[in-house]
Length: 233
Image (cartoon, rainbow, N blue to C red; front, side, top):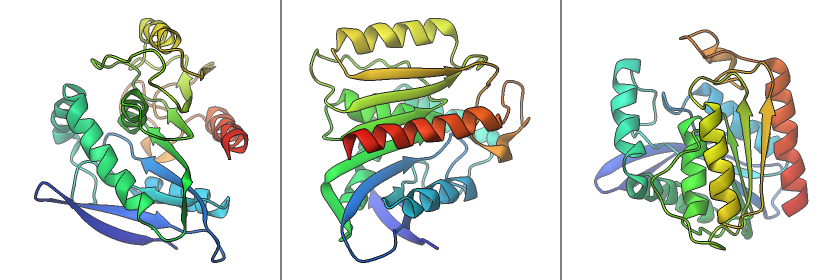
Protein backbone atom coordinates (compact mmCIF):
# COMPACT_ATOMS: atom_id res chain seq x y z
CA UNK A 1 0.00 0.00 0.00
CA UNK A 2 1.45 3.34 -1.05
CA UNK A 3 1.04 6.84 0.31
CA UNK A 4 -0.19 10.09 -1.14
CA UNK A 5 2.29 12.98 -1.21
CA UNK A 6 1.36 16.62 -1.72
CA UNK A 7 3.71 19.04 -3.45
CA UNK A 8 3.45 22.61 -4.67
CA UNK A 9 4.21 24.30 -7.96
CA UNK A 10 3.50 27.99 -8.51
CA UNK A 11 0.77 28.10 -5.88
CA UNK A 12 -1.01 24.95 -7.06
CA UNK A 13 -1.20 21.79 -4.92
CA UNK A 14 -0.52 18.52 -6.67
CA UNK A 15 -1.05 15.14 -4.99
CA UNK A 16 1.02 12.20 -6.18
CA UNK A 17 1.34 8.61 -5.03
CA UNK A 18 4.47 6.88 -3.72
CA UNK A 19 4.90 3.09 -3.71
CA UNK A 20 7.94 1.50 -2.09
CA UNK A 21 9.48 -1.94 -2.59
CA UNK A 22 10.05 -4.28 0.33
CA UNK A 23 13.16 -3.85 2.46
CA UNK A 24 15.27 -0.83 3.33
CA UNK A 25 17.85 -0.79 0.54
CA UNK A 26 18.06 1.87 -2.11
CA UNK A 27 16.42 0.98 -5.40
CA UNK A 28 16.01 2.45 -8.88
CA UNK A 29 13.28 5.07 -9.13
CA UNK A 30 10.50 5.20 -11.70
CA UNK A 31 8.36 8.27 -12.35
CA UNK A 32 4.82 7.37 -13.42
CA UNK A 33 2.84 9.89 -15.52
CA UNK A 34 -0.90 9.27 -15.69
CA UNK A 35 -3.38 9.31 -18.55
CA UNK A 36 -5.19 12.42 -19.77
CA UNK A 37 -8.24 12.18 -17.45
CA UNK A 38 -6.01 12.42 -14.37
CA UNK A 39 -4.37 10.39 -11.63
CA UNK A 40 -6.57 7.43 -10.70
CA UNK A 41 -6.75 3.98 -9.16
CA UNK A 42 -5.28 2.65 -12.38
CA UNK A 43 -2.25 4.90 -11.85
CA UNK A 44 -1.86 3.68 -8.27
CA UNK A 45 -2.02 0.07 -9.47
CA UNK A 46 0.77 0.69 -11.97
CA UNK A 47 2.93 2.25 -9.23
CA UNK A 48 2.21 -0.68 -6.88
CA UNK A 49 3.18 -3.16 -9.60
CA UNK A 50 6.47 -1.35 -10.12
CA UNK A 51 7.16 -1.44 -6.38
CA UNK A 52 6.49 -5.19 -6.39
CA UNK A 53 9.23 -5.47 -9.04
CA UNK A 54 11.69 -3.70 -6.74
CA UNK A 55 11.41 -0.08 -7.88
CA UNK A 56 10.57 3.07 -5.94
CA UNK A 57 7.63 4.41 -7.95
CA UNK A 58 6.21 7.92 -7.71
CA UNK A 59 3.09 8.75 -9.70
CA UNK A 60 2.98 12.49 -10.32
CA UNK A 61 -0.21 14.51 -10.67
CA UNK A 62 -0.07 16.90 -13.62
CA UNK A 63 -3.60 18.35 -13.36
CA UNK A 64 -3.55 19.18 -9.65
CA UNK A 65 -5.73 18.20 -6.73
CA UNK A 66 -4.86 14.51 -6.92
CA UNK A 67 -8.03 13.49 -8.73
CA UNK A 68 -9.48 12.88 -12.15
CA UNK A 69 -11.02 15.76 -14.06
CA UNK A 70 -14.42 15.76 -15.81
CA UNK A 71 -14.13 14.66 -19.44
CA UNK A 72 -15.55 17.98 -20.60
CA UNK A 73 -12.61 19.75 -18.90
CA UNK A 74 -9.93 17.25 -19.87
CA UNK A 75 -9.24 18.48 -23.40
CA UNK A 76 -9.01 22.09 -22.26
CA UNK A 77 -6.41 21.12 -19.68
CA UNK A 78 -4.54 18.88 -22.10
CA UNK A 79 -4.49 21.44 -24.91
CA UNK A 80 -2.94 23.97 -22.53
CA UNK A 81 -0.10 21.48 -22.01
CA UNK A 82 0.12 20.22 -25.60
CA UNK A 83 0.61 23.77 -26.86
CA UNK A 84 3.19 24.56 -24.17
CA UNK A 85 6.01 22.01 -23.95
CA UNK A 86 7.70 24.30 -21.39
CA UNK A 87 4.72 24.01 -19.02
CA UNK A 88 4.56 20.27 -19.58
CA UNK A 89 8.25 20.00 -18.76
CA UNK A 90 7.84 22.14 -15.65
CA UNK A 91 5.13 19.87 -14.23
CA UNK A 92 7.08 16.75 -15.15
CA UNK A 93 10.20 18.02 -13.40
CA UNK A 94 8.20 18.95 -10.29
CA UNK A 95 7.09 15.33 -9.99
CA UNK A 96 10.57 14.05 -10.81
CA UNK A 97 12.02 16.16 -8.01
CA UNK A 98 9.64 14.52 -5.54
CA UNK A 99 10.85 11.10 -6.68
CA UNK A 100 14.51 12.13 -6.43
CA UNK A 101 13.97 13.40 -2.89
CA UNK A 102 12.86 9.99 -1.58
CA UNK A 103 15.45 8.39 0.75
CA UNK A 104 15.03 4.94 -0.80
CA UNK A 105 15.82 6.13 -4.34
CA UNK A 106 19.14 5.45 -6.00
CA UNK A 107 19.34 8.76 -7.87
CA UNK A 108 21.86 7.35 -10.34
CA UNK A 109 19.20 4.93 -11.65
CA UNK A 110 16.03 6.76 -12.71
CA UNK A 111 13.46 6.04 -15.40
CA UNK A 112 10.01 7.34 -16.31
CA UNK A 113 6.91 5.77 -17.80
CA UNK A 114 3.73 7.41 -18.98
CA UNK A 115 0.31 6.68 -20.41
CA UNK A 116 -1.50 8.73 -23.04
CA UNK A 117 -0.40 12.36 -22.49
CA UNK A 118 1.72 11.06 -19.61
CA UNK A 119 3.81 9.30 -22.23
CA UNK A 120 4.13 12.58 -24.12
CA UNK A 121 5.29 14.14 -20.86
CA UNK A 122 8.04 11.52 -20.55
CA UNK A 123 9.14 12.30 -24.09
CA UNK A 124 9.34 16.01 -23.30
CA UNK A 125 11.63 15.16 -20.38
CA UNK A 126 14.11 13.37 -22.62
CA UNK A 127 13.80 15.90 -25.42
CA UNK A 128 14.99 18.45 -22.87
CA UNK A 129 18.03 16.29 -22.06
CA UNK A 130 16.85 15.25 -18.58
CA UNK A 131 19.22 12.74 -17.00
CA UNK A 132 17.18 9.52 -17.17
CA UNK A 133 18.25 5.97 -17.95
CA UNK A 134 15.11 5.19 -19.96
CA UNK A 135 11.55 6.25 -20.65
CA UNK A 136 8.59 4.18 -21.76
CA UNK A 137 5.46 5.64 -23.31
CA UNK A 138 2.28 3.58 -23.52
CA UNK A 139 -0.20 4.76 -26.21
CA UNK A 140 1.53 8.12 -25.90
CA UNK A 141 1.13 11.08 -28.20
CA UNK A 142 4.37 11.38 -30.19
CA UNK A 143 4.24 14.87 -31.69
CA UNK A 144 5.83 17.99 -30.23
CA UNK A 145 6.76 21.55 -31.10
CA UNK A 146 10.08 21.13 -29.27
CA UNK A 147 13.27 21.14 -31.30
CA UNK A 148 15.75 18.44 -30.34
CA UNK A 149 19.45 18.79 -31.06
CA UNK A 150 21.37 15.69 -32.17
CA UNK A 151 22.78 13.94 -29.11
CA UNK A 152 20.49 15.74 -26.67
CA UNK A 153 18.48 12.62 -25.86
CA UNK A 154 20.63 10.47 -23.59
CA UNK A 155 17.93 8.11 -22.27
CA UNK A 156 16.88 4.94 -24.04
CA UNK A 157 13.42 5.52 -25.50
CA UNK A 158 10.62 2.98 -25.92
CA UNK A 159 7.13 3.81 -27.12
CA UNK A 160 4.35 1.21 -27.27
CA UNK A 161 1.62 2.15 -29.74
CA UNK A 162 -1.61 0.54 -30.93
CA UNK A 163 -1.68 0.06 -34.71
CA UNK A 164 -5.38 1.02 -34.73
CA UNK A 165 -5.09 4.00 -32.37
CA UNK A 166 -6.91 6.88 -34.12
CA UNK A 167 -5.21 9.42 -31.84
CA UNK A 168 -1.73 8.36 -32.96
CA UNK A 169 -2.07 7.84 -36.73
CA UNK A 170 0.70 6.39 -38.91
CA UNK A 171 1.96 9.79 -40.07
CA UNK A 172 2.62 10.74 -36.44
CA UNK A 173 4.60 7.52 -35.99
CA UNK A 174 6.63 8.25 -39.13
CA UNK A 175 7.40 11.80 -37.97
CA UNK A 176 8.50 10.46 -34.59
CA UNK A 177 10.82 7.94 -36.23
CA UNK A 178 12.47 10.75 -38.17
CA UNK A 179 12.72 12.95 -35.07
CA UNK A 180 14.39 10.23 -33.02
CA UNK A 181 16.69 9.21 -35.86
CA UNK A 182 17.74 12.81 -36.55
CA UNK A 183 18.38 13.25 -32.81
CA UNK A 184 20.61 10.15 -32.89
CA UNK A 185 18.61 8.72 -29.97
CA UNK A 186 18.64 5.09 -28.84
CA UNK A 187 14.97 4.48 -29.53
CA UNK A 188 12.51 1.72 -30.33
CA UNK A 189 8.82 1.57 -31.14
CA UNK A 190 6.54 -1.42 -30.58
CA UNK A 191 3.34 -1.34 -32.62
CA UNK A 192 0.62 -3.77 -31.54
CA UNK A 193 -1.75 -5.04 -34.20
CA UNK A 194 -5.44 -4.62 -33.41
CA UNK A 195 -4.77 -2.34 -30.41
CA UNK A 196 -6.48 1.03 -30.02
CA UNK A 197 -5.93 3.91 -27.58
CA UNK A 198 -5.67 3.22 -23.82
CA UNK A 199 -5.00 -0.46 -24.49
CA UNK A 200 -3.43 -0.78 -21.01
CA UNK A 201 -6.45 0.45 -19.04
CA UNK A 202 -9.43 -1.89 -18.46
CA UNK A 203 -11.32 1.00 -16.86
CA UNK A 204 -11.19 3.05 -20.05
CA UNK A 205 -12.63 0.23 -22.13
CA UNK A 206 -15.11 1.59 -24.66
CA UNK A 207 -15.50 4.95 -22.89
CA UNK A 208 -15.41 6.62 -26.31
CA UNK A 209 -14.67 5.59 -29.90
CA UNK A 210 -11.10 4.49 -30.46
CA UNK A 211 -10.54 3.61 -26.79
CA UNK A 212 -10.36 -0.09 -26.02
CA UNK A 213 -8.51 -2.33 -23.58
CA UNK A 214 -6.38 -5.02 -25.21
CA UNK A 215 -5.09 -7.71 -22.85
CA UNK A 216 -2.36 -8.98 -25.16
CA UNK A 217 -0.99 -5.51 -25.92
CA UNK A 218 -1.18 -4.63 -22.22
CA UNK A 219 0.86 -7.68 -21.17
CA UNK A 220 3.34 -7.44 -24.03
CA UNK A 221 4.02 -3.73 -23.52
CA UNK A 222 4.54 -4.23 -19.76
CA UNK A 223 7.04 -6.99 -20.55
CA UNK A 224 8.77 -4.69 -23.04
CA UNK A 225 9.09 -2.12 -20.26
CA UNK A 226 10.61 -4.75 -17.97
CA UNK A 227 13.08 -5.70 -20.69
CA UNK A 228 14.36 -2.16 -21.17
CA UNK A 229 14.62 -1.69 -17.41
CA UNK A 230 16.64 -4.90 -17.16
CA UNK A 231 18.91 -3.46 -19.83
CA UNK A 232 19.54 -0.11 -18.14
CA UNK A 233 19.42 -1.18 -14.47
